[in-house]
Image (tube, rainbow, N blue to C red; front, side, top):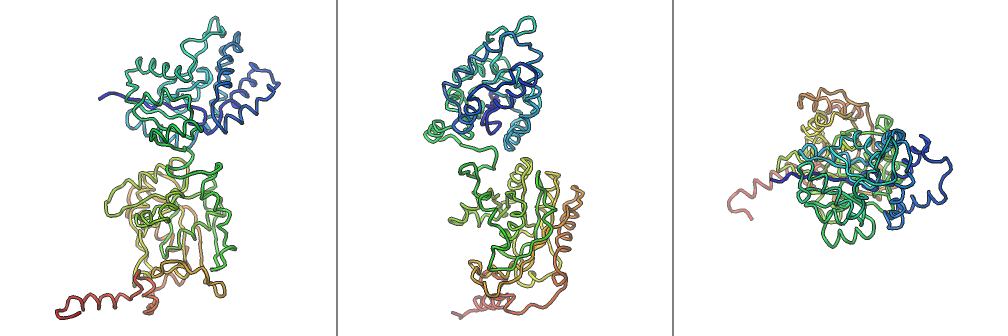
Length: 476
C-alpha cells in the first residue's frame, strides 16, 4: 500500500488568519525591517484575513526575496524563532487534533506554505511536523543572495515543492491528504487522494461544492457552522440568563468552578429534557460553548437534530456499544473545549426517579480517563417541573407561579482514572452533595408524580396492568 502524508497550508488554515503581522513584527524586532510600517500594510492583511490570497499580493510576496538580499541569515532565523513562538499560540485547536491523528496513523505531517522556510521552520519544529515545504532563499557567506532555491511555493509551485519532498521521503502524493483555504492551491488539492478545504475563500468554496470536497473549520467541531465568524451557540450564550427565564425561578451557583479556558468535563444528574438548557444557564455566565453528548434519538429528530448538531453535539447510540462517541468527545477535549455528559445516561423512570442513590454509567469515567482533564459536577434540581418526561414540550407559559430550579456547580472531582467503577461512584457522590437535602432522602411519590416520570404519562402500575390484560385470552 502506498505511503501518504498530510500537507497543511499555514495562513487561514493552520492558523485562522494571516501570519504576516506576526512575522513582520519579528523581523522588526531583530532589526531586519525598519520600525516604520509600510503604508497600507494593515489594510493588505485585513483583506487577506477576510478574502484569502489574491494574485497582486502574491506577486508582491514573490518580490520579497529581493528585499531580503543582504540580510544576515542568523538574524532571519532568530526572527523565525520569535514568530514561531507567537504563531504556536494561534494554531487552530482542531488543527492540532488532526496533526496528532495523522501521526497516530503513521502518516508524516508536512507544513506546505509560501512563507519563507527560515521563518516557518521553528513553528514546524514546535508543532512536531515531519517536514517543511516552503519558499527557500539562497544563501552565501551568511547572507541571503536575493535568489531562490527551487520554486516559489505558490500555486503550481507548491505542488512542485510537495512532489520534490514526497519523492525524497518515499511518499506518494496521490495517496496523501492536503488541507488549504486557497483557490490557488487547486493544483495540490487536485493531486491528492483526500483534498480537504478549510475556511475557504469564495472561489475555492465553489470548487469544493462542485467537486464534493469536505469543508471544515478548524476552530470548531465538524458540522458546527459559523456566520460572520460566530457559531450559533456563541450567539445564544448572552441570552442564557436566569433572569430572562420568566417561566422558572432559576438559581445558578458555583460557576467560578467552570474553567474560563482549557478543557473540562461537566457531569450533571438527569431529571428532565430541560437539563441541557439549565446547564446552559451556568455556561452562559462563563461565556464558553459546551458540547453535549446526547442520545441518537435527539439527533435523529427533525429540526431539533439539526440544531443539536449545529451546536456541536456528539451523537451517542447506546445500542451499538461503540466507544466512538467517547473518542469524538476526547478530541473535543484535546482541542481545549468543554464537554457535558449526563452519567445516568437517561432520565430515571417511575420510582427510580425518586431514588436518592444516583446510579451512573461508565461513560463519564472512561472519558475522564482518556482525556485526564478536570471533571466538574453539576447538581440539577426542579428541572422536571419545567419539562416533565411525560410532556412533549416544556411549559414556558407558567409565568404567574414559576417553579424553582437549582443549578449548582461544584469543585473539580479527584479521580484515580484507573477504575471506572470507583470513578463513577465518586462522580455521582459529588453530584449528590450539590443537591438540596430533600434529594438525599427517600419518600413515597404520589401516582401523579410517578406518571410525570413516564414518557406515556401512565403510572408503572397502569402499564403493567395493560400488559397483563393484553396477555389474557379473550380480551380486546
